[in-house]
Image (cartoon, rainbow, N blue to C red; front, side, top):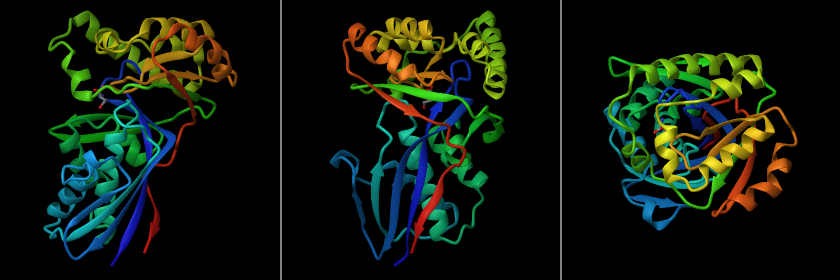
Length: 296
Ligand code: HSE
């Protein structure tokens, strides 16, 4: 029976003002192996709670086969995840992407990456994590007539990302439920302008511009109530000169810098101002998207 292992990078979505639109792939990975069997479903490598048919890798695997009118026979799925679950680093998108790519590879790559993005976006509801997970690097996406349209943006290679990952999770559904249905015109203009300048600052490697542009009025101020010590951590990071934002829906907080000593600077000060334990994960930009690492 055929098997394939797909490696998908972590992703940080939004990048401040680019809510549901911007995303960047990072150097942390989830590997998922799909092995075809005659019948049944077996999922290993994850918590018991995720071993049923609602596992996102399986849901997406089935959706891609259904789109090709192919029957779903049995499959064994093994998940080897570095990406922490429900922390705002694209763990769900990674499973969706792996499932879609796994099914496509096992069926002779009948669908294009755009086709796989269309199917997974219909499940996720927004393409900001999915697009960089598929394509790598920095992406901006829109959804037009129900279909995602993605563009890769240039990214200065010197940026380093320091993810501050707490020991508590934050379900995206909860983090979206606190957002208002309506925005003022002033806040909409603020986000459009800041978003455009975030992309330029990331391209130029301009830390000062990024610090100023990476501000948002659409989601972060509502979500920070769900994250103890958010304001204190933001104030501390801003003293270092790094740019700061919520990673995706949170609770991970993201520092973007070119300062190689940022982690050391935060190491002593962070525990002194926070209640939770915050792990620091130094990450690089991942310019390559999801890929096959083994195929038998
Ligand atoms: N753009 C999404 C959000 C990312 O902020 O809710 C998390 O899925």
